[in-house]
Length: 174
Image (cartoon, rainbow, N blue to C red):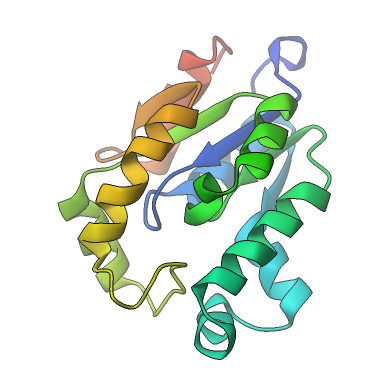
C-alpha cells in the first residue's frame, strides 16, 4: 500500500473509453486507501438510465452537460476519480479536477481502444453519431494531452502494472 503522507488529495483519471480508467481506478483506490468514484456511474444513478439510454433519449450534448454538472458537484476529496471520456470538453470541470489533484491521462493507441470497445457491451460515447470512433479519438487526444499533468501509456500491461506506473510517475511509493 502506498504511504498516505505522500498522497495527493485526489488523483483524476482521464482518457478515451476503453483506456482502463475504471479498472485502474479501483486498483489505485485499494492501493492508496483513497475512495473510488466513477463519474459514468454517478451520471447513470443521477439520470436513472444507462449512458447508452441517455444518448438515445437526449443526445450527446445533454450527456456532456450532465457529466459537467456531476463533476462540478461531486465530492472530490481524497478520491480516485475515473471520469467520462468527454470530460475534456468542459473547461470548468477540468479546472475543478486540477484544483483537487493531478490529472492523469491514460494514453492508449487507437487500434487497442477499438479492440477493447468493440469487445465490450454497447457503451454510451458522448459524441455525434456522424463521428467514427477514430474521429472522436483524433478530436479528444490533443485535449487529453493539454489537460494532463502526467501521461501514462496504458496500451500494454495489466491494470496492476498501469496503476504502478501512475504511482511511480506521481512519486508515490508503489
